[in-house]
Image 1 (cartoon, one colour):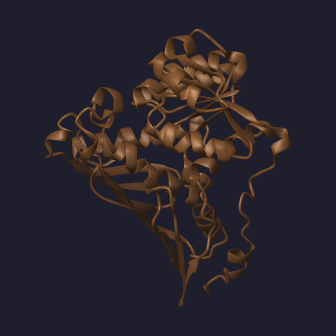
Image 2 (tube, helix red, strand yellow):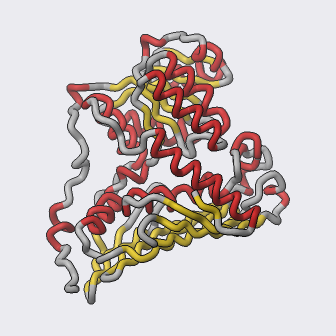
Image 3 (spheres, helix red, strand yellow):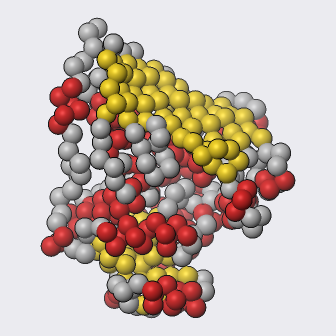
Length: 359
């Protein structure tokens, strides 16, 4: 089989080819739930720079903190305590919610937002356990609200271009995948919620980091997981409550494609995703830590593919708002997120049982 000439796809790629709405159609007004550093340092600036979004409400367990953040941001009309949000305060001031709390607290806020008839953008993993994630999905379905799990890699230009190259056959038939994501959270203190089994769920590294190569592989290849194998270990005393200070796992996807992945919360900051096909390779490196680069090798040709450098959070928020304004369903629905939750549960189960687990 002759390699596909992929040069036209590298030249014709359009940034934000998914966008249908304009600024005149918005803005979508957000209530941001959970005011940790990711929300204040990443999400709020992204929304301020976005085309289709605006922050009008902030929600925290601490009413004082919510009021303080509201005072510091001109667009924010009101700060609410968690109890006030659940009780339905200020529902006329926002159209959608962004839920960025510890995993085990997603469900309560999604259930309330759905009961209020609001659209929902919920951070990943969608909950601490598969059972709770199913309840989250059921709440969204019962209320018939637009809901999306916040997989920011879906709107990353390098990932979308890699997906297109695979789809047009540039690397031939996908054969296997290598993926990894790591960072160190030991300097964040022992009270870090990712080290609390009651809040994080199954574990620290695969749930929080390993989900990136899992889901991004699913998105690029459009194939679903069918079985997993896994090994993991925790020796540092920070990780006494979770099993996966470091983890290595293999995910079998439909069509006999195998993704071998690693994840660690006690390692150097690093990430990559390499997809090897019968005729070539696409590599995203760096991959998942808020910036991405793409290399394509087909036949004897290797190209460093230029892609727009974007704020991944800004892209994610505008994509969700665009879907909402255009009346279209996002790719990462709660049902999409449930596939990852089943996969995560199976990976931890496989490590504990030391055997292959079907999904």
